Amino acid sequence: MGSLLDAVQENEAGIHEQRERVAALREQLKKVDLPEARQLEVLADSLVQKSVWIIGGDGWAYDIGFGGLDHVLASGRNVNILVLDTEVYSNTGGQTSKATPRGAVAKFSAGGKATPKKDLAMIAMAYGNVYVAQVAYGAKDVQTLKAFMEAESWPGVSIIIAYSPCTAWGTDMINNHAMQDRAVRSGHWPLFRYDPRRAARQENPLQLDSKEPSIAYREFVSQETRFNMLWRSHPEAAEKFLGEAQKHALSNFQHYRQLAELSYAKPEEIKPAQAKE
Image (cartoon, rainbow, N blue to C red; front, side):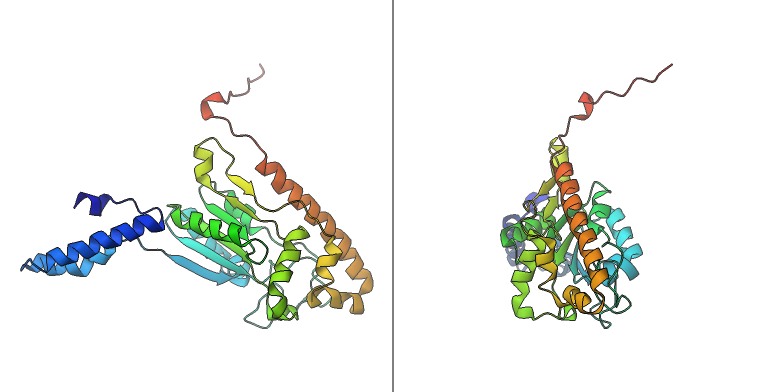
C-alpha cells in the first residue's frame, strides 16, 4: 500500500507502473466483501496522477483572458498550459491581437501593425517557478517533444507557446512546416526552454534551442501573404516595418542568448554589496 500512496509519477514510466499497481489493487478488492472495498474501487483511479492541460489561442492568452492566465501562472499548481499562437484572432475573423507581429496585415491593422509582438514567454519566466517553452515542431520536432515531456514532469505550472500557422494569414497550409522553419531561421520565433529545476542545481534554467538567425527577415515575410500584401498597398510603410522588425528579431535573439549564457552561482557564494557610509 505504501508504494501506491508514495509512488513517484514524474514520467510516463512511473505513471505506467502506478496503473499496474492500481489494477492489482482492484483484483484484491474483488475478494473483499465490505462497503469500504466498494468505495475504494470507485476512488482507485485517483491514485494515478492526472495530466491537466489548458489549451487556448493567442487571443485568449495574450489579450482577453490574460488576467486569468496570469492567475494560473501565479498559482503554483500542477497544471499545464498550451498556447496555440496563430498571431491573430483566428476564430473571430482575423483581427489584430497583441500576438500579431509588427508589419502584419489583419483586421483593424490594414496598414500593417505598427507595434511589436508581446513577449508572453518572458512574462511567464519572470515568475521563476514556471516551466516555459517556445516551440515550433515544423522547425525542430525533437525540441518540441522535449518541451512537452519536461512540462509534464514539472510539478508546478508549465506553459508551452507553439507557433501555429493559420489560414487567416492568407497562406496555403500545405506549406505549414516550411513556414515554421523560416520563422525560426529568421529569428522571428526563437526556440527555448526555461526549466526551474536547473536553477536549483546552480545551472542556468534557460536553454536556447535555436541558432542565430541565418536568413534575412525579408525572406521570411516575403513568403507570407499577411506581410507581403502590404508592399502592394503601403510600400513605404512595408519597408519601414521590415527594417524595424529585422532589428527587433536580431536584438531579441541576442537578448535571449545573453540570458541563456549567464552563469548561476550558489546563493552562499553571492556576497551583498557593501553600503557606503
